[in-house]
Length: 205
Length: 205
View 1 (cartoon, each protein chain N blue to C red):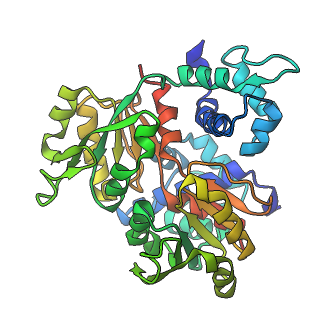
View 2: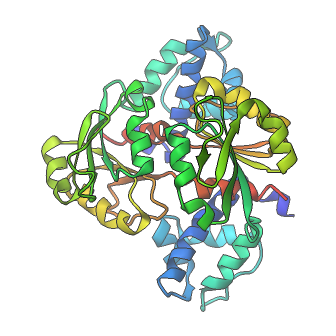
């Protein structure tokens, strides 16, 4: 049954989780689908429908226990455990990501970093030593990491992604502004500010 | 009629555009909805349906002229003209974005940058001098910029966004991991790697 949840619903769960975590930090203990929806711009009906796909989380009239709902969503998303990440490409963006505390605070730890620049290889970024991208597939396989962030130039992204897949990577967050062509079982998400900006200019004069 | 296009369709157009631009760079002149769809993991039927909302772009059997389709999508998204951007928050990520060539290459120019750190104010980043965030609303209004990227910490994001709106900003790309509560007419898009990673861990064991 879990496997039939539409991907678009799965994709909204982290947003619900983020909002719930902010509420909890603000000392709020219970919430309603209306309140949660208002805080993230999604309708209450949509939230109820999404959550109902995973089970019965709230009681009619009393709303959701925030702590319980956070716990449930964390279980669904498999983030009750920490995850290790591979960072590929230590340019300006890779550097910024390696220094960003938000990953380890939320259970994602950069365990390996790779670049092809000899002046960077051997240097330390965050808590890891930058290794040669030529060794990536093997090092990643030995370490057993399943998640990667790709911050190489567009021209290098496809071949780096293929090396990651050879190393056993199952999911890639791709910052390079290009679509990756990978085996179907590899999950890919994209982050591209240009795509987001061009989405918004549609609404501007 | 244009105003009735679903936002989710508008959001796919920049992805089509990106794929088409890569094809054009590779010397390809025409494409089909099937080929375009394969390259970005969207069904051919979806692409035909999306594009038909804006008019008649291809001929049955002969496919789309890539150059023509790029031109049309650029018109629809209002990106035949350049856009100026405000960058708010010049930490590691703001720095990386200010140095990223991909913005100006695609017609987005960082025209103003703000921070609250006295050691940063007055320094140059990219082509702009970092100004005091306390002056932001006024400076933005005088310059007439309509688009902003927000790369401040979560705790500062809501108030910075409100200042931007006071300055006349109509669209914000928010990198802070928090939902913004702004007037309905202000467009907000979010970039949060944690949300993307948590989406993918659902599919991993």
